[in-house]
Image (tube, rainbow, N blue to C red; front, side):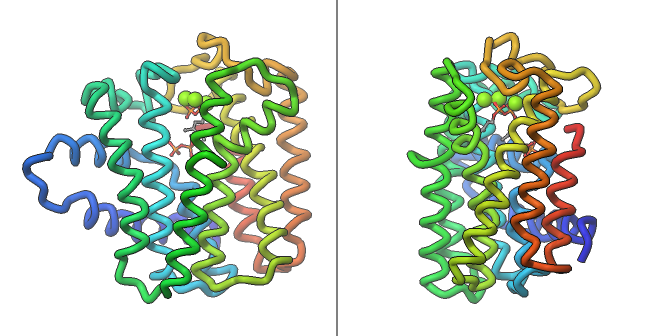
Length: 291
Ligand code: IPE
Ligand code: IPE
Ligand code: MG
Ligand code: MG
Ligand code: MG
């Protein structure tokens, strides 16, 4: 399986699940569904689900067992973006080339769409018909809860808002707001594949630790530079006086750090041998992306 196959699997399977879970008839709250669907279905890259489905070629995890965690992590990610764009946070008008959720539906619905996507992520893990054991489902819930909340994304967003960064605190903020969900994606895949060997899990964590940090630095560089086609307002970080990697260290140093992190990431999965190529391809895709 190469990267194109992986993204195809991801898109096809997610589309099916999203249609199923986002189209449940709830006519009394139709607008809520519209806002949730708008945020989830408007063309994200699906990087986090791709890390979950990578467990299929890597560890022979059945695709069916990857469906619920892949959808769940994308629900959490989508909720995090809706809230990230709100006036109280980044006040971003554009997301994926279209009006951000609150611009389209208003703030109250955008907040509630995020609030609804979050528990839906946990609901899908508990209720999806795949042959996942109770222990697997529990472990997925733990991973997801930890990575989204107090020990992960939400805490990172708070540090982002507080600003005032040193190199160490900036790195910590990136690990929390972005790295935690990326690491969770591969951990969820490992659970789908019943991988319990602590040495393997630690190496995978080292890999996603580097990739998560590089992912956010790359995101900041894309915001900073002109040739990007992010579908987001360019230069927003600067206009918000955000302390980012390029601001603190300059563009060249940031690019160097991204490359070093990718080398470290590659090195940490050498033990996977040929099978590891799918993770390296995913990492390269993140490194070279323009959006
Ligand atoms: C954007 O994530 C937010 C960050 C953590 C940098 P993505 O770049 O994965 O966003 P989409 O889902 O593809 O739009
Ligand atoms: C990542 O940071 C945000 C989340 C954790 C949701 P950014 O604020 O830089 O993400 P973008 O650039 O708006 O996608
Ligand atoms: Mg932000
Ligand atoms: Mg933002
Ligand atoms: Mg950004």
